[in-house]
Length: 64
Image 1 (cartoon, rainbow, N blue to C red):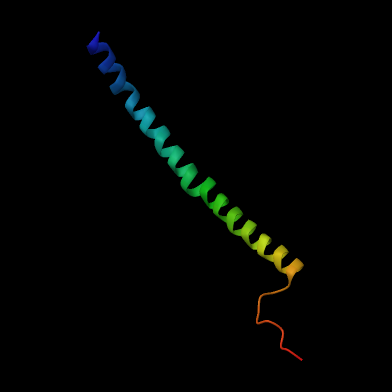
Image 2 (cartoon, rainbow, N blue to C red):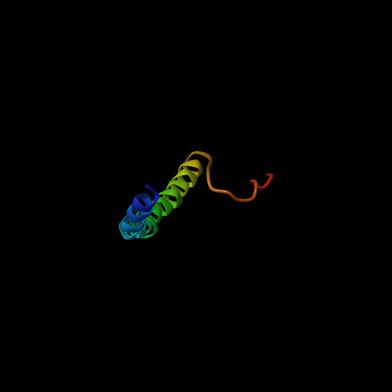
């Protein structure tokens, strides 16, 4: 029984390695760049909306 299970493991190894490589490539060059752009864009949008409501940052107004 142990010979059969070790044979099955060696037969599945190339397919799982190929699938793992494909998964890595999809994550590294597909999903994570989109997530990074979405996070940076979302942060920029939040800063823009905050400044639209409360005004841009700067020194306090000068006394008259």
